[in-house]
Structure formats: structure tokens, C-alpha cells
Image 1 (tube, rainbow, N blue to C red):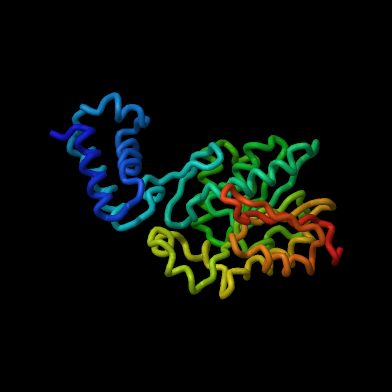
Image 2: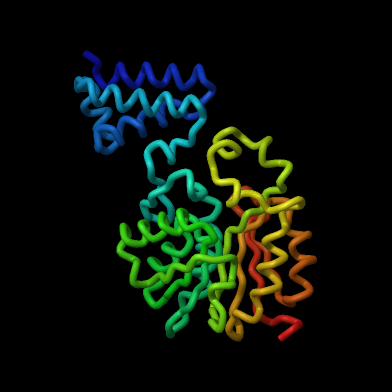
Length: 286
């Protein structure tokens, strides 16, 4: 018979031996999901004896984790901006850094007293689109992704979070499905990792996360070039394009953007690294 405290101690040891950071925390997260309990339960009932099925399910999760499969894929969900999102191998796992992008967009739109039209390009799990729809009552989002399986996850997340009526989903490449529409904001966390670097990333990313959501081409800037060039004709007057960027990409993206936008702002993250770029529709070609 195995009690909660003994199972956690055993799993923590296994995870540490396999070089998994935050071993104790991850073991607790897996057991919380197996038992469907809050974390406090593990401490207040640490003498609870687990049944055979619970033990089997828990150690199957540990086995997957020591192969460096991301914990979010193993438990099947990830929290983002107070939303609980379904995630699997078809979508990039939402990162805390992307919350900065969402917060900057919300800050710039929250005082508009009209129907707010937003486009989320490369929606993935729907994290950005759903967050904007949740925090801006008068916002409606057109969410685009090139992969149908990815789009199915985003649709499921919209339904799960009761936001389906505020989001239209489109299968297609960048802005192509949105012809003849104008937006207050176009938002994207595009693939921005140079192709040759991907295989050198940590195993959790390089092996398990969808390459299509990571690979930004030879220099990591392919999607910025296309999105920046195409966006002005989809923006309303005084609208803006907001994109997440790599920590060392601001200068390169600025050079691209200067051909289409005059007003360029870079936002830093909590580590004082460049993280978000806002391009306002005071552009040279309109």
C-alpha cells in the first residue's frame, strides 16, 4: 500500500535522477490531476492510500515526463490569463511572456466605446484570442491558423471557456482568410526561431512542440516580413499591429517595419528583454 507522501517522494527522486527541474512541484501536479484534487489536499491528506489504478496512472505520467515530454501535454491543459486551456502536440504551449503581448493589446483597446475588431494570426491554442475576448466585453476576434488540428483545439478552448460567440475561426495562411475586413488590432505570436537553432533547444521544445509554430525561417524573420507588409491594408485608421518578438530581434524587425510604419514601440518583459513590438497604422504606404 502506498500513501501520497511516499508516492511523491519516490516520484521526486525519479525526476531528479532524470534531470527534471522543479521535480517535487511536477510530481505534485501530476498527482493532483490523477486524484482531481487541489494541491492543499496532498498536504492535508498525505497519509491517504492510493489504489492500484491511481498508482498506475501516476507513474505513467512520470515515465512520460522523464522522456522530457512537457508536463502540459501530459496533463492536457495549461493556465493562461486566468483561462484553462486544452493543449496537446498540435499547439504551442502558452508562455507567461505572451501574457505581456495580451496585456499591451488590452491596455490600448479597453477605452474604445464601440465594437472592437481584433485579428489573431496563428492562433494556436487560442490563448491570445480567448484572453482578449474575455477581458474586453465589446471585442470580437477573428482567429486564423494554417493547421486544422490546431484550429480544432482552439475551438474546443473557446467552447470550454464560454467564448465561442465572440470568436470566428478561419483556416488559412496569415491574413488571407480575412480579405475585405478592417481591424482595430492585429495580434500575433509568430514563429520566430531560426531554423538551424531549433534542434539545439531543450528537448521539451525541440522534440515535442510543433515545429510549424517555432520555425521562423533562416533568420527567424520570415513571418514578420509577410505580416508587417500585409497588415496596413487590414488595419482601421489608428489601428495597430502587435507582435511578440525574440529578445534579440527588435532592431532587425524595426528595419523591416520602417518600410511600412512610422510609429514603432518596443515593450520589454520583466527581465528587461525586448518582448513585444507595437506598430501603429500611421504608415508610409497608406
